[in-house]
Amino acid sequence: MAADSGRTDSAGADSGGAGVVRTHVVTHLPGDGVGPEVTEVARACVDAVAEQHGFAVEWRPCELGGQHYLKTGEVLPDPVLAQLRESDAVLLGAVGTPEVPPGVLERGLLLRLRFELDLYVNLRPSKLRPGVGGAVGRHGLSDLDFVIVRENTEGLYAGAGGTVHRGTQFETATEESLNTWAGVRRCVQYAASLAAQRSGRLTLVHKTNVLTHAGDLWNRIAREVAAEAGLELSYAHVDAACLWLVDDPKRFDVIVTDNLFGDIISDLGAALTGGLGYAASGNLNPDKTGPSIFEPVHGSAPDIAGKGLANPVGAVLSASLMLSHLGEAKAAADLDAAVDAVLAAGAPGTTGDWEKALLVQLGGSR
Ligand code: IPM
Ligand code: MN
Image (cartoon, rainbow, N blue to C red; front, side, top):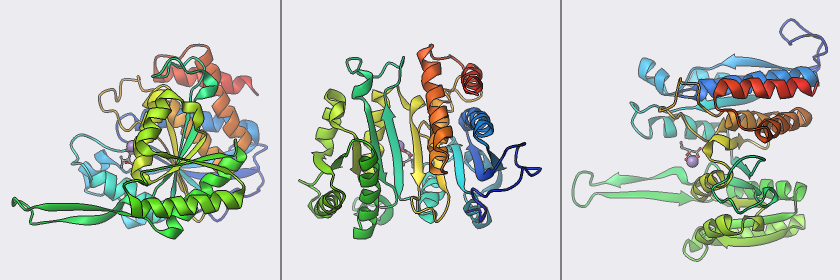
């Protein structure tokens, strides 16, 4: 992290103008496909709210991703990782391009960043916004507003497992789910503190009836942490949670769950609230021992890349999560509200129209 994060200084040459009292260093990692288009909009919005709230963002460019890999063979060189560690946050667009084989960037870049920077929470809010048709039309706005706290460094993603007897009929492939007491506990603790700030309701989603070892650990920890925090804890098996998320989503406020379950149910959450274009995420290091990474969930969408058609809302809302994490709660709320205001007036059809409409909203609140 930048040692001078959130520092107070006089309006220096690089600090964005008079009245600036804090500067946050943010690495901009646009990546591939629609990543550059959507993060440009998010950047412009962040700069607009920063100016109004008396802080500045020093953007540092970082070229990583599929195109960069094809050009250079580099996935995540150590010096680049060291540079990333120096920033207060990372705004990531998307990585991935059809020419790069599966796993190279997912494991070598995204997951490595999550592990190296100890981003142990993946925060995935799902909120139905005005004017957005969710996949299930019968729910009202207030019914669909929940947050998934996905454990982000363990479980089936940890990388334990392997292949033996490859290429024979006895080829055996294993993927092991790793669940540590400390890893589960810190994730549940984060979820509990979030639930305490919201409705006080926390739900553990797992599959304790089948995954009895990991399930028992998660269940005991969730009970302990909820009791310590004075929270109401409920439990849903992951299959039932899918059904209830569609049928009766107001059961849920803060969901805490394991890495793969969280990956899957957060896409369901996105589908229920307008689709992946609207879904934001924060890969958080809640202890702030390093930068957190904020990214829209939609991926690089090569089919529409470069056409100006990408919906930038996922990136803008991810930037809002970023500002909140950086301690700029009011600016974060302004970004969020600007998205709602633009949506209420009818969603723009192009990335450029989105940018204009958002900047008008943000300027209007000056
Ligand atoms: C996500 C993505 C990633 C994940 C992939 C690309 C590694 O699906 O952020 O949800 O599985 O976590
Ligand atoms: Mn996913």
